Image (cartoon, rainbow, N blue to C red; front, side, top):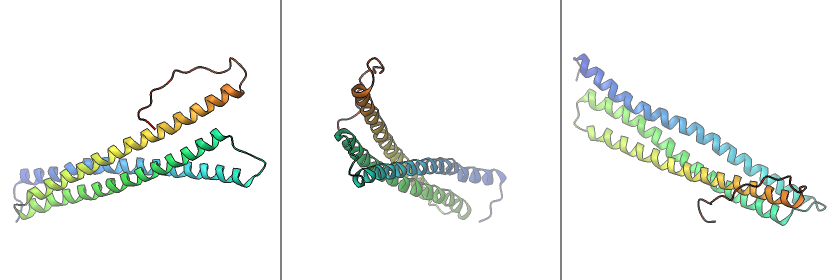
Length: 180
């Protein structure tokens, strides 16, 4: 079927471009999530190297609090990496579905087939995957924030033990966002 009317052509093109905004959003989230995953992997390697160094050197001993903190951090970074990997999988799938949505809109418009609901369904599935991955990223960022808070509390406790008196700034107690 040939498209003869310019307004029809423009409406089809604008309908095909609409998923492009979601494609761009998915791509931006993929880039940011990949960077977060790289940082989580680097953090895991740093902690692993620290523990390995301590295990090799018999003269050096970890404080029990430091050992506990390192293993807690290691567990958290592993959990973060898993969540980020899951989020990336959903983001890549959403990206593919948004591209398929754009193609489906074009095919339906050119062929005149009465299956416009397919493009709508694909768009909803892609948006759902985008939402799901956003929830995973929120959870991962909360785990990362908890790890930072725990590390700050550890340094604060060390400072109270080893620093000269009146050298530390008291900070208010924070409320945890979830139980351990």
